[in-house]
Length: 581
Image 1 (cartoon, rainbow, N blue to C red):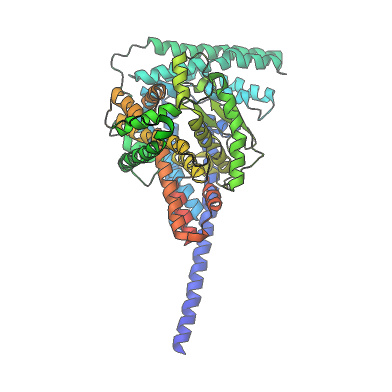
Image 2 (tube, rainbow, N blue to C red):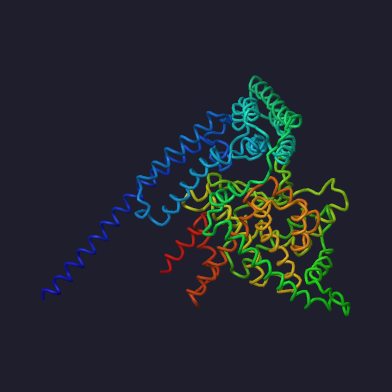
């Protein structure tokens, strides 16, 4: 009887303890939610251009001048909010709020590191460009034209001071970032030279407002062009190397990728995987050889053999003038396949618009997605496609062989359905604004890479060996992005060796390899996001398949995974595994 009483009391005590912890957790979450609301509002005030891009338009009229005062504002904001985070016990928060806590902390620490240690504002002139925000405000119809123009007019006032501050900040910049800044600023300046002026003429503004706006636009145009001219004439006898270096690289990887792997670890995984993919490609090539080459002897060098097969298949491509139209045509076909295979719900109410790549985006990538922010969910999502107009015939042919009829389909899976476009629509539906606005690049890119393989595994391309061979070629590109980025920025790989890696080992066309060299010379770490994110997502799926057995459902996995917003995969993994325990 005494023993029973003791157990009963122990049970009551345990229930009381659980209730106490639940109440404490609820109170902690309530306080943390209030903190997040204050934090994000203050964040937008400090970063108005970012706010505008996310569909939050309260600060559209503000342009921050990138001087020492602004840096101090950012550092003070980061320090204060990092201190505020300490009041919350991470272990007492809900799973969703734990992730938000960690993402906020990473964002703030990253800001401090970039200003104090990386200091790219001194050596990367392409950090300074106002054209994109003004182009966005002018082109997106989130408010009446007159209202947008009034905000633009106020924002224009600070453009000359913005570029004067940029000039003051720059010290021995890299040659590569200097040229990128010149190209992108001059390309984007059309927004002030023509686009804005044309909109003013058709507006309902008063004559005084029109004159003020026109004068300010002219001053902004002069500032943009003046900055480009200043960069052209800048005496720079000792330019900084564009290579980030072995001291800065690991930390940037840590902040940007937020992976469970270190930069060294993912480099080792990619190196091993490259050999495995080469072996798979050799098998497929040997299978296809009689079909395309009959009794012609196969080269003894396996990579040369694979290259010959890829070159033969790559001649099947669209005409230069049909490149964008062919992309537009394929999007509904991908949607239909996803529906037929029941892989994922795709919201038909969210438009995807294929468009020519805007001028201010030139110089980094040939295809990309521009998605609306979480505050502007009904706006268009754009599939930006680089134009081939004006390209020399040989360069155009090289590019189109790279994006042949097989790989163009895989590109559209990656960029659109069910890749970036689909994931970003889901991300904007996330109940957490933090996960949406501080989206993790490795998760975003990793998802797009994951869907390429997932679609082929689900039967896309009818399991044709040609499609699988081209998939592996494309996947080698993802993998070699990691190898290239690490080798160039940490191990100081030469351009010659980089081009050899991309053309000989990854079977890329010369134009693609040359473009990738340009990209790695003006970006750091971002190229590792594709393979890192893919590896973590694919491994998570396989772990859950093994754990759930016959109960595993692919569509349920996809929708659950995407429901957490664009959080780092390591946090999503933790949440999903906790739910299955």
